Length: 304
Image 1 (cartoon, rainbow, N blue to C red):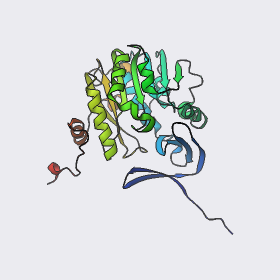
Image 2: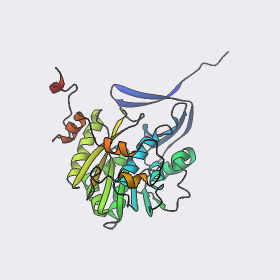
Image 3: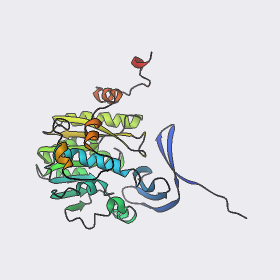
Image 4: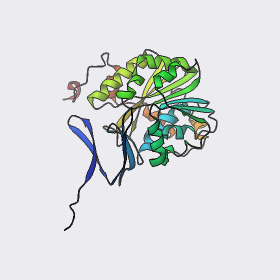
């Protein structure tokens, strides 16, 4: 008698009424660490992917969109960046892109859970394959806020907050205290890039607006830019850009960046300019005075 065919699906709830699923061809690994549950899966469409506490982190198919846009936008704004701090990013994708710049002198990567990095080196060499051999990369396995608090003033030119959502171990990376510490440890022309959530589902919208308000209290130049990534809720996601000196549009060094000769799959000089042109509804969300007030869709002012 033939055995029944059973589909295995990874499913993430994007909100209370919306789900996203990927057919799993093979579960690769699962474990619970002191910080979170880590699962690795294999799929036909998205290749190998992994989740933390059930939330999608990285897939082989679309990781380039996230890692291109977190890394290359600041590097094209200030091509002279030499000292970089990555908070989170244990999968290695962000450090992979930063380490493609030969003039970078030092990259400190602070990941709270060492097992994330170890397992990505085993199952996702696409993003983590450089970690064992890149001499400029220095991993630190500790809490990101604690690390920054113990860092001397002006230690970095660029901080990349490659964090999970503001829940669990990632919660401390979305506080005013954290942003003030980042400001302190950045050099006089330092840049901060932070994961800025999505403008579609209520939880993400609240956190997006809270983060934007807090960063504006600390940095003189604050912008938001967007990118598309298929496997994150809604597919429409944002990064925050904050700096002591540089404006990402007025100071965009397109020619100098292009002279690096880097091959990228998502980022280019035109995307850099266009990513900061946000839809009207996103601008209105970011401008809202109360971060807990959510917009109504469709907006009554736009319906005939």
